[in-house]
Image: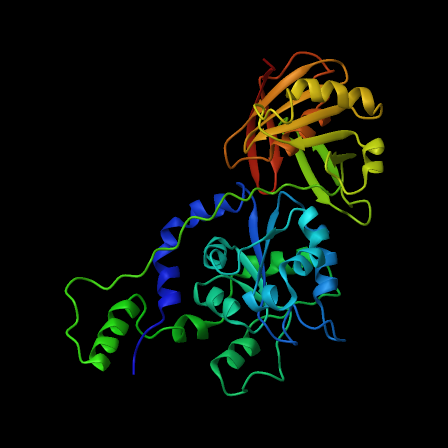
Length: 388
């Protein structure tokens, strides 16, 4: 008996809101949203820690991804949260969270994350299958050979989908996945034989079973809500590589919690958040950052904080308060106080501050008015004005 798939239909209906969902998850222009997902099973991606568990190795490879190239979000089955407890799950993922990884609400927001995603790293669970049904590239890090029927459509999907090699660099594998754009055809064809009509089909079926007359008017499903804004706040130390191109744009590549010095051309500096887990790292920082609204009475005036921070940490050249999604206030050791502003979903203000430092400003002389920053795959224009 045909009933359709209400979950998939809600996803399909919300596809036009993809840009809003991406902004809600803090995805910026030039970034790709990578969703890691796990179902609930000992052989899943977030499994039992047995000999075949690749999750610890995968999490350790996330710092290889430049912050401005990838925004990473984790979707875990509700039973993972309830089985182990939210506190334990957050503890296991604490390092990833400090490196800017978002934890997605397992009930309210996972569909929105799937719609917003550019690529999915997952397992044999339904989230990976739905992603492929939407045409999103999927790579599998756990295939569950002992728990799925060889003759099922899920098994066919697992056989056809590319597999992740946790022992090689993550970035090239994701780049190859996204460049190919290849997605197994099974999920798109088999997820629902009547997409968009589940509400009508199921209501008709239920009323017929009950022997009641179906009410007039269309049968409708609740739309997916817009998730709360979840920007990427990185409190792990960030290594930054910068260089200025022939066009005058400052290229910024940032790596959170990097275990080794990032490879690549350009000058390097260290950015440390005020809320770092290791306060000793502040003594080594070239740039110290904090996040907070300029009018937050708990924090005090941004420039006063910046002045005190520079006085306290003598090796720090720039103190930065990120005051909004596109703005920050900075004070340089030379005494210059500046405001930086870009587009809402443009460059991360902290990255713009690193570009300002790399350009030799404000110590180098007159303000540029507009600073051109290349981050991820995009070029951004950031206005630079004296702080009020």
